[in-house]
Image 1: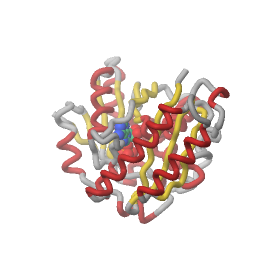
Image 2 (image 1 turned 90 degrees about the vertical axis):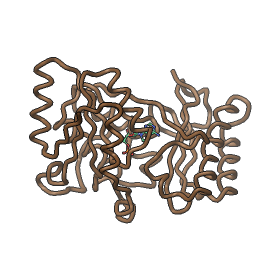
Image 3 (image 1 turned 90 degrees about the horizontal axis):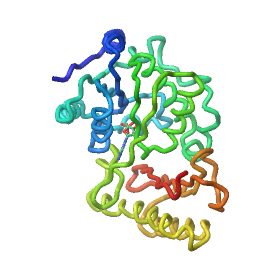
Amino acid sequence: MIIIIEKAEDMSRLADKAHKKNLTVGFIPTMGALHKGHIKLVKASKKQCDFTIVSIFVNPTQFNDKNDLQKYPRTLDKDIEMLFEPSTDIVFVPQEEEIYPYGVDFENDLDLGGKDLPLEGKFRPGHFKGVAQVVKRLLEIVKPTHLFMGLKDFQQVAVVQHIIDRYEIPTKLVPVSTMREKSGLAMSSRNARLSEEGKEKAATIYKVLSSIVRNYNKRPVNYLLDKGFQKLKETGFETEYLSVVDGHTLQEISDLNDTDYAVVCVATWLEGVRLIDNMIIKQP
Ligand code: AMP
């Protein structure tokens, strides 16, 4: 049985009950339009925690593009159906006023340690301020012992880990690897807006990333990135960035000997849809 909760107060009360019983509480924040990638996070929580809570909230403060917010798919009934099979305990579906009781505030001065500035930060200014704001607020309401987040959003994981450390939030962040289609395309709620042909083309992102991971010690990084950029262009993509970064700092690197943790990250547009993905090249 799934319990659906709309009020922040009710959510906190139930979380408190679980804490009193010393139960571990796993939490998966989402914006809905669920797919198997989200379900992978739910299953990871079910495996590790006594109690699993999923939130569905399309957070307006993380959309720097109003059009993107409007077009974001909303499929609540189907989402709840998808959460039955992995036996989610609670689905938290707050309205805006539950999350932002003092009104939606697009400005905040949370310290993100600069983790928000590279990569996405250059193309979606303010996005991670919104993400940090909503995640911090949700963590205050849900008070989970464990927070499950997808490595598909690599920079998001880094930003959230920073706020957990910085604001001494007693929650353990558990990163979960990316769930992909058979073609290699990373699952995303945004894929639903691609045509069938677009979905096939979008698998090129996976091919480009895999080729960089395969060849990083055979060719200079900049050569591989140029080649990847060209391949995406030929396929019809408009690429915002294709970069190799240090996994600790998220700063761009061109010599992989400079770090023990390297990740290749991409953001690119196809058919008016913005797609992001990444692959770990080497990990400590
Ligand atoms: P979203 O609803 O897109 O905000 O995503 C909610 C959570 O699901 C985030 O932690 C995402 O990183 C994660 N997620 C989204 N897509 C995938 C995927 N393909 N594989 C694993 N996790 C994912």
